[in-house]
Structure formats: C-alpha cells, structure tokens
Length: 88
Image (tube, rainbow, N blue to C red; front, side, top):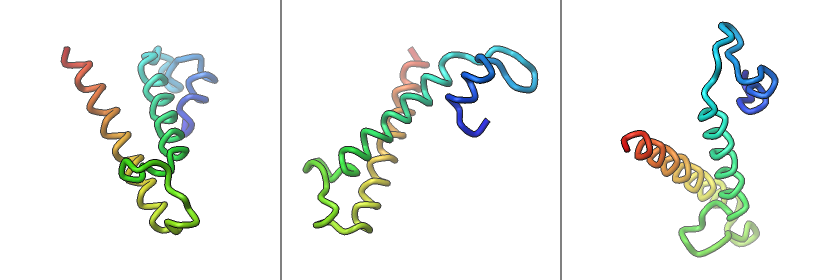
C-alpha cells in the first residue's frame, strides 16, 4: 500500500479492503508525479531557468534547496493541471 503503482498492479486495480475497483486516474497521476520527480532531479533541481546545476560549484546544500524547489513547483503544476481538467 505504500508503493502506489506496485500496489495497484499487485491488487489488480482493486481496493485491498473492499475489493472495489480503483479508478485508473490514480496510478496515472502517481506515474506522472514520479516522472516529474525524475525529470526535476535530472535537470539538477531547477536552477532558476539557467540549466542544470553543477554540484561541485553549487554545493550540496544549495543543490538540495534547488531540487526541493523544482519538486514543489512540479507538484504544484501537476495539481493545478488536474484541477483545471476537472473543471472543464
């Protein structure tokens, strides 16, 4: 239950306790969020639009803050996009 995509696959898209079907939207959103996390990490934590951050120049603390910023922005944009889709 703590690994959403794996849990959905193991339970074949059904709730563990009541066996009701789980909407395919939830695994899709989880996969999209995971891809955004990977993309943000590979991009070097955002970098304020200047491209990837060189860890040797930025230092680990600055890199961590920039990474957290990129992840937060990605999560915000994903949430905003899903709300916009629901309101159509």
